[in-house]
Length: 341
Image (cartoon, rainbow, N blue to C red; front, side, top):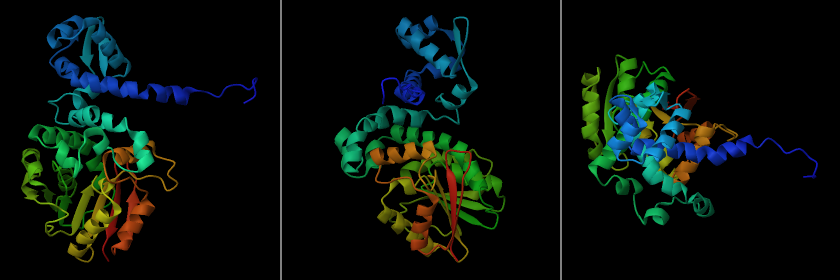
């Protein structure tokens, strides 16, 4: 660059330089219990500091940063939650994302610190970061509290995405949905609400079913949803004319994906289908940013990756599906429907 050439706008670099600070501000506020405390009523900084045993000056800085991030409102010296914070950042909210936020703060934050090595070696960072071998999910979910917290984070995520996913295609012709790795049952609930003639099964590991039982049981469609324990890689799949895979395929290697898709294809009747909920990369992979960032997250955390619709079509056709369509949604997840001829 010539000495007299005007400098380009640095805003994109400056924004990214600060971006991790914004994330950590929210993570810390959740971890310290600020939103939970304020959900019980507006408070001054000094009142919060005394209740939560925090340094008043440092807390004021954090609170004002949360105001700047539109997570809190302030009237005079009194702080209160915004509606967004009350909905997603409080541990008693039915739509909370706090479990996933905690997982991001305490687990993924450290994995991402080793992103450079993930790119050098092309493998996840569990061994480097935590010294763990073997199935990564079983390590993190060793305790019931850890599993429940993560599942509730996924539930909040599902409340945002699942209604959009089940509306992306007309699924009215199907009669029995089996949601493989269905977690809390959010997709099964959304599908049964939208399609009154549909019955559903939440199929997941035994440890996930107690929470699913609570959430499904409290829904208005509980009488049409069954819970079945099993491992979709090893156990016989329940009978269905529609299977769902929500945020499942992006976790695994291509070999494991093909194995699972073959099991589904072989179990489906003619005209049956599989509904896949993942965030699709654009065909040229220039976006969307959410999918690109999740693709790097898969690199640090799993064996898998995010894909384009064309890449999913290739996998699905390899096992025998001939009609494969994709739909983008306004939610964090898109939808792919593959039909067995």
